[in-house]
Length: 241
Image (cartoon, rainbow, N blue to C red; front, side, top):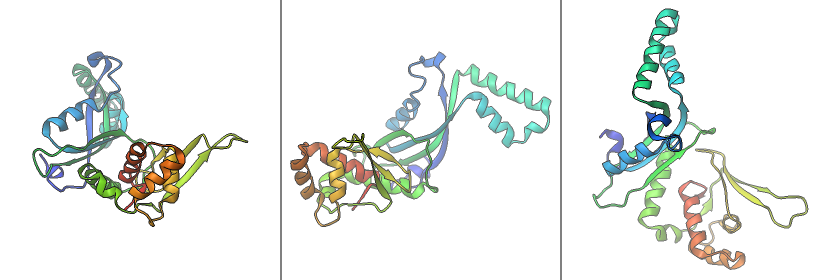
């Protein structure tokens, strides 16, 4: 276990992982990149957030390593090493290599419920991502520990978050409402009409537990459903306490 998995760690590590090909696990499972890291962190008993930023074929991976090692200067040596890389990958049925970020934390107690998240984020992000990852993980662990305590606080929309609405001409209501972040992971996520109403009213005057019933009474939404969506928005940084 390295330092990133120590209790209280909040800085992600860069990581790459070889992924099995379709010949080894079947075509339907070949794109399910998170199966192996999910198994590793579950066995280790760690809080974990695994983010895949890119995936390359064995050929692309070999080209990167050979270029970084400046072995393309000698064409004969380049071709020999390139073939060796591909033979090695083929012998172990490697279908690709995933690149990304790995955040790990040891729970404070052995019986603590684990927070584990696996996602692919390939779009434009704001660097460095370390602070955004640390804050997101902190909010997620707090929500897992006591979601009620979070909802008892006034929540406000983060300053970098904007709203997008899409509707047909003449339509009374928008068909799609999107909350978009301008920093960090720069997520863009569809939100329900109730969540949009909550975001519009979240000016810090009332706590979330007071706003949720009021918004639900106007939109006909189940309070539990809106509370869960509000917590998700809080964890991902669309809302701030």
